[in-house]
Amino acid sequence: MKPPTIFKIAVEALITMSLIALLGLLTALTYALLSFLGAEPTDQSLLTSQTETPEVTVKNLTAPNPVLPDATVALPSAKAAPKLKAMVKEVKTEIIAEVATKPLTKMTVQELRPLAKERKIPNWRKLKKKELIFYLTA
Figure 1: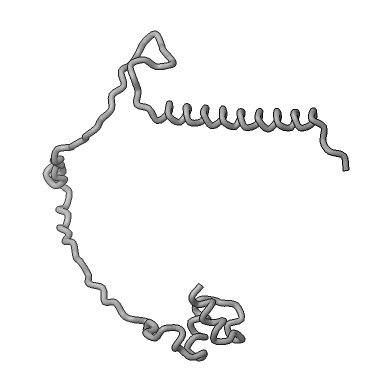
Figure 2: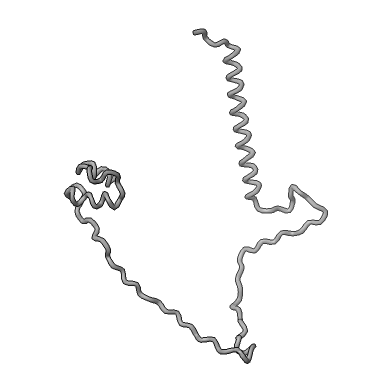
């Protein structure tokens, strides 16, 4: 096998350095664009127009308590709306399944297989105890 010539090595190095420089330039342009888009507006902008409109930003917006007109007063023929009360229901929680209190290593194969079935482990019927424990802890 013939060793590469110095010209070929120089060309490959030049191409590699050019690609690295282009990637660096692309990264710098991306950061510049992101910082430009994320910056707050200033008095001087890149696109100046004949008529400049001031930009106003609202930092804290608070609204007073609104006073809504009463519908029954505005319309005499309207029926009075029933008053609604917020009802909170207490939900009773039921325990559907008991949580395994024993560690997996002390459980039998007959106790481990239903857990493997619930977790949809493939071939759970044919697995040995060590394999069941491995899949259940993974």
